[in-house]
Length: 284
Image 1: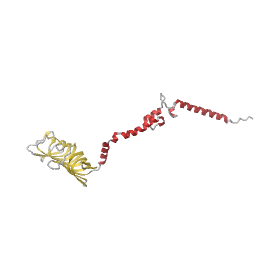
Image 2 (image 1 turned 180 degrees about the vertical axis):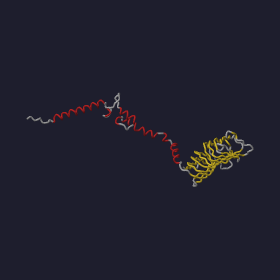
Image 3 (image 1 turned 90 degrees about the vertical axis):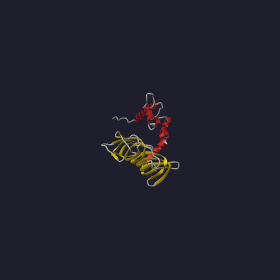
Image 4 (image 1 turned 60 degrees about the vertical axis):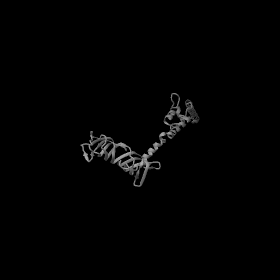
């Protein structure tokens, strides 16, 4: 009886040594092919010029992708660019932008507002006015009503009243201009009626008094003058040589050239500031 020869582990060990040598030699050849351009992975992904495509991706997308394929000098530049840009951004450093943003954010609370003043602001806006009364002498420019000229014969003074006016509203201390439509008009107690809205237009009317029942105004600037300002029934200040800025106003506006205090405004407001040589007051 012939028995098999016992297993010889020597041949298996020799096989493993040969295979290990082949693998190590292959890795060494790949590293030589890479020309020392980076890690093991970049040896497999190269462009036609021998440069690493991974390095190109890192340069395009930021410093989070395979930073080890980017030279240290370039990496330092990438890391500093964003910080330098944020610190030197002129928009972020513009004090006017910061102040404007803060003002808009802060001017959110309305307060009761009352003002009597000897100066008149310049207003030029589209307005919706519930009722308005204008008193002027009969030296007015042409007043157009429904494309016809309003005749004011033998009238020394004219009182023009209107309701639900919608259109251009422009006035200052010198004159008043309107161009819009109203539901009804009354001239010296004579009511003018029409089937539809009444078109009304005149320019630079020298008025004696103007009474506006309700109007919204924004960014109103009133030049230096004297008067009395009351806010929220808590603050009353005698103005002397100060100018006013009102971010928003909603209420009644009266102008009377026969009175010392030409202007009266009563309603609600927000974003009120007073500035002069001795006072800087801001209520938002």
